[in-house]
Image (tube, rainbow, N blue to C red; front, side):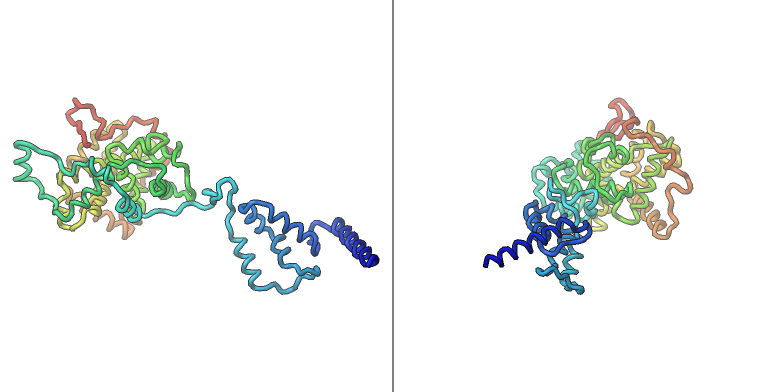
Length: 386
């Protein structure tokens, strides 16, 4: 018994000496495997995943007790190895995947709209005024010569649009963040998420580092309209052309702020029942509102380019555009239809051969932009939308 114990200790010491003398590229049969597994059990789970991606651990698990490693590896082991290699790195601090490596998914307009259809908006709905209140001769004239009233069964859809316009941007709501990220990615071509606050939003035409501060009078509806514009393949081309025009070295303007003003015009046209006839004809409200927004933005870009407007003209251009759009909504929508039909055939181009992206325009904070709500009260063209 004593001889066997001594023999066992001598054998163990001999193996320990071999372990110390092996090269870094060789995996010792048993002791090293056991120590690796013991060390592996002692580290946090996120780091375990990272460690398992190292082949040394997987090799240790497949080594036989006697030190012999089979020449043919079991298919289940291979499959497990492939799965571990596909596991993305996880940060121990947060337990979540790095946003720079795993960008968030884009969100469609219908997904975002469904979100607002399912959340409780009762507190915001109390604030809306669905139609303009008219009295005296103005009410009589509107009754006799004005547009028809919106059908009863469409009023709930109209109220939803106006309620969303009362909602602000909530950075704590994941859907709100996804909408912003989608707009940024589609306009810039970026594949990765960005911070919800920062100077990069000024590159898109917001006037500050926080987009929420530019949504006055239009609320989250302004972002939904931008989302609609960039998530349809036809209107995306239009949005990109207008975006390039907004960065022209002479005719530059803050793209997103201009879009917010177009949404304001759309809200006012809806409240003044200018869109009721078309909504009744199509038996829907939201698609008509979206198309009116896109058509108005297209009209503004056409005027801006062909009449060589600059940022100093913005308030008055928007005022004239509002009056024309309310007066001829059907004509405006027809223009959009023709443009989009040309896009589908590869024939429509808002900017033609004009190079509008070079040189790069300054940040929007360096521009003095006048929106439809910013004209002075004593101006003959002043307007107050909401």
